[in-house]
Length: 283
Image 1 (cartoon, rainbow, N blue to C red):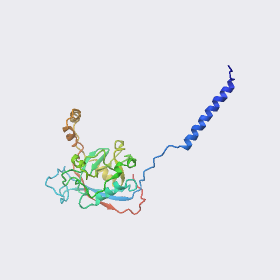
Image 2: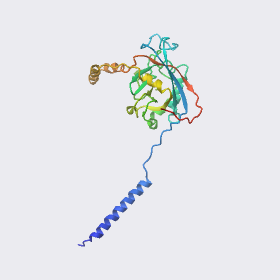
Image 3: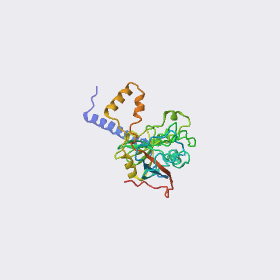
Image 4: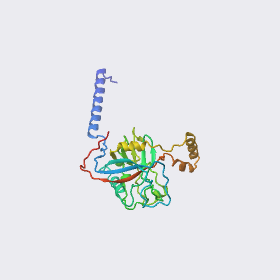
């Protein structure tokens, strides 16, 4: 049996080590890991939402019709205008649907309320119900195209990282169950983040499609409206009822976070973009 000299063994080990390192470096250079392209947040469209406040909580009138002018009496207090810049290159169908909902004379966001407020996080608007009254968006929006953005993974790349982001509600959707089962159903409910921090729980389940360009102070004032909050005992009882499979627990929970004063969209529409490449200017 031949015994190799120690210095010869060290030389072999060093040679193998260098070859492995060279091979690893070559593979890493030739086969880089795929990179996900950044979403295009160019602002292609602008819309406005005018908000007003009812001094007291408004309960919908069962006899109300689409011809009703406002979901509040004449003493509604204007809250201000919010101008939104929309990312039409990132999610074109979501943006075109939102624009149509701001401009359609028959079915639109006009005269619909902020139906949920989550303090320090976001508020919801644009809910649909089977029996449409002055406080909801009408169901079966047949004039809207199907939104294939909702099945494209790239649509969910923008995180809910700051206040003033507008997002299409998928995981946070509050639409009437019967309405969602209809084959003509279209998702139009949206949320706006209010801050002060990010909302990571919304990421991956809702589509950010725009940002507040003007009126972030209006968003903040809406977020300051107190919502209904049950006591801790009621919350615990509700959790226990849900654990037992009591369906009434979910019905009771649907009333949580409803604003105690009615804030509604008193007007909405489209604004012309002077520069399609306009960048958002946020505080």
